[in-house]
Length: 379
Ligand code: NZQ
Ligand code: ZN
Image (cartoon, rainbow, N blue to C red; front, side):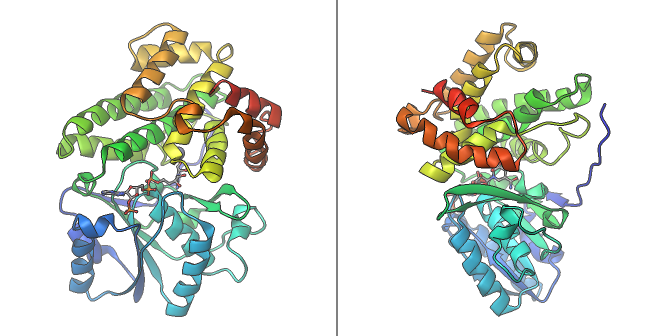
């Protein structure tokens, strides 16, 4: 096992009817309540949250309208709003896009200059507002990690920030809140959580990590199994609960503690697809990952076989890749660029875009040429 520091201060309140209790956990004088395009108003989560805030005499102002693949202009505008309202906490009610926007706003609140500085390493996040979460969609694990991803629409960069101060203080994980997540978003959550697990599994630089491999494999089996159960019956509580906790554990630091250096190359390339074409994060990953595996076939063959045996009931590497692709197809996500109507003549442009993030993440082997070769395997 490699040396590691594991730090995760987020308090998780998990279970049915926990949304109604959110007001008990909030601290502060004035909270900014943030949400997305309105699903929480249709499914009743908004009313539950507001009732709880009122019951606990919590002052709040609201900002809805976060869009999937959240954008910088909205973050900037909301920072100004938050400053003018003198808020001292943020309550994010939503999926990754709402939580990530809340994190960027929480960091930008205490910063004099442009919040984008944090994303391009021009400034370091020293302080952030406390963030509270009511999770409505399981996918990203943003509810229990210190990262956030925002797209700069002007520069077409989808970049991230990371800081200890961005861990949510409390996250409410009520599986019932995800009953209304439509099938396509369930599939997206499944793919995202799977790739979070697989990035570390395939890029770690230390062999003897049975605990971490075991975590990854059991989480993958659970996520894939429960996805199928949810697609059959969206109000299966246990399936929603198992899926929810698995997705959170997939990117809260647990599975990568002790594996040494690892990277997120599929996310690096995928973020460019979302930045340029505004496709769902999960679709960018279901397109890139099979191609990335094919590109790395020779040097990752043993690992592919390990994955095949542990998760896909398969002992052949090539057949394992085919089973991953079949699984993706069976849940309705794209598995190559044409599936997402992306023209292969764009590959050099996508690779140019992606290499900026490769540099930021110090994925130094990923030159424009290498990224283009990987994308060529996705046509
Ligand atoms: O906007 P509303 O109306 O709420 O609808 C949303 C949105 O349209 C809908 N939805 C959410 N909860 C629902 C629901 N619909 C019905 N019932 C519910 N209970 O689902 C749609 C997608 O929501 P979004 O928040 O965009 O999805 P997700 O959670 O997958 O977040 C994706 C974003 O997170 C980033 C991605 O890049 C992407 O921008 N990621 C964040 C990470 C992190 N912070 O650690 C890591 C990931 O790798 C990822 O990059
Ligand atoms: Zn992801």
